Length: 121
Image (cartoon, rainbow, N blue to C red; front, side, top):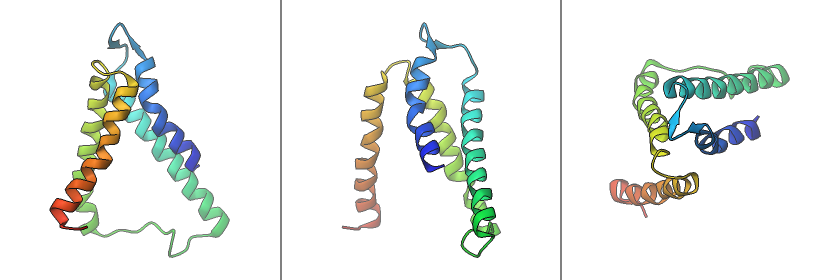
């Protein structure tokens, strides 16, 4: 299951570039993004059900949350949505390898911000 989710996530950039015709997409970018995320959710839920059937529901794999946890979920969810939608428009100007290099700069910027904001070494 982990392999399937990794393959889906890593192939997304290539599939977006391959689906472009004359610099445009012949489908709704929002719908495509929704379907990709729905597929990821379905695969994750299938993996969870498989674990429940194999090991049973335990304290470690039980689904539970509090209102305080749920309140903060929309913030990263909206940022992730914007990032995924912008990805389609970025490919109008950047090729797939260039995008992957720019995307990997995320690791460096995260490390720098972690050090600056949290004052960690």
